[in-house]
Image (cartoon, rainbow, N blue to C red):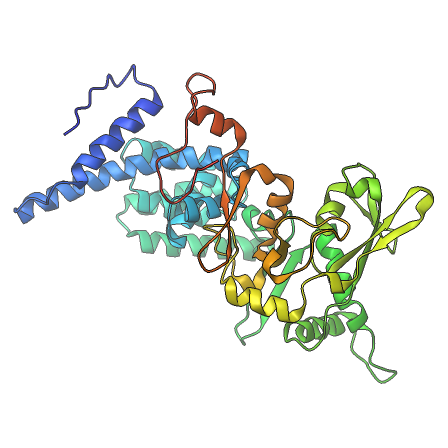
Length: 425
């Protein structure tokens, strides 16, 4: 049995967390008391303590989320970090993240939760209710919803009042729900949200960055042309039909060409361009050269064409079918993106055709991790499992690895003791 001695006022936050972890470990090893009445009392006390911990967690998670720290460790979003690294289920991830993001706008909720005067369930309910409101409406809604809490309404009832408040504000302002900020920044600033209508259809709203827009245009524009003089559909209707045709497998995606200098592909800063003149930043052009579906036209000095990548250099349909059988999800350990939504990745990189597009040199990775692997190769460890599948393991950022070996600055924190992530360098 370990002993814990901590001077509360003098202890650092790290010392308090470590002490709490030690106490929790000891408590978890003990059997529940025989007395049911004692268990009831202990449960109420422990839940109140857990609510106080949730207040602290909201502050920690909020700081990580605001700084984007999880991206340095190889996680595309805060949700992915909480799910993969900490093993949280989606509902708990949503609860903790919405509270972390809204606490700065909810001073009363934040203060009462930290003081033990408000349960975590009520705090999350209020935070979720105001997430889509502006600051002025948020302040008024916070006061109103806390008033319902004080009247003794259950968390479910308070949530219903919160939905009603949102409906009234939307009706007042004649607005529709917009996607939250996390939805917008989930994939290199491209985002897409769909809402099912009452008749079974879907409303679709989104925005694509230049790279994704090039693929969209190259794929759908040729298919969205009028079918003939009798085709009376407008462009929006033809585009929807083209998208449905591609999604159903009725058409093969058209080729998109990105024109760039050889120096750009090898690390230069000169922007690339689409065939219609749309500029593409150099960093995106280099990522495009690694992605299936887009061909890079490389120009030497004097704009002399040196190489045009053909679609045949990309994985064939048969190869992709094999890869989807091998990889049910992204090759990055812990990433949950289904293999059917992943990109074909040249495991050892592709440059000017020197890396073969052979089935034993390919893997499936989601778009975010494909770009992460390209930009931070020192944070990806590649191995093969016994079945011949490539396994990509995320490594900590270099500065975190230095702190783990004692080379970091005083007070730096090493890698947590968690088998969910391999830390081998």
